[in-house]
Image (cartoon, rainbow, N blue to C red):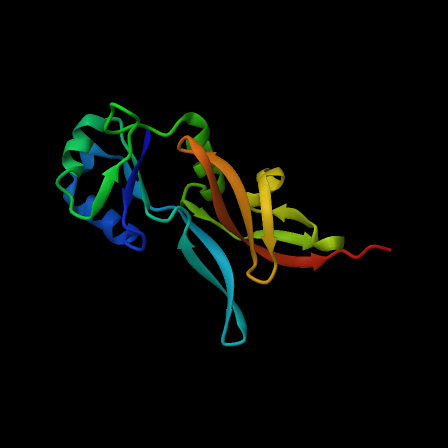
Length: 173
């Protein structure tokens, strides 16, 4: 099952590395920080960059949550292991796990979605992780080359920013 650990924003990779080094591998199958690709302009050029998809969160996969929880208590820099009332540690539900898997794939990296911009700045997703979430798009920022989607995650509504790349412009007649 997949579990979520909260840490300091900006410290996700460093903390995940610390967990991988300090926790015996038989207590967890995987420890990762989901990323997203984004296109940013610097030096007059558009470049792909990678950013944290869920700031301040680390994901672990284990079928030994109690032992893992005890090991994680020894790792500095963890803010908290997220749990429901009365529990220290709980798994993502099936839908949440599927969402993270669909957006980031096996590598836990959400690639840039290719979009076509139509009349009134309406976008049509041609390919990429946004394809299945068009109805959940709250805002599209063409200048920043990103789309904001609203999803249900860890029991509450959360907004995620996903990168977009404009591959064509569809003009009305």
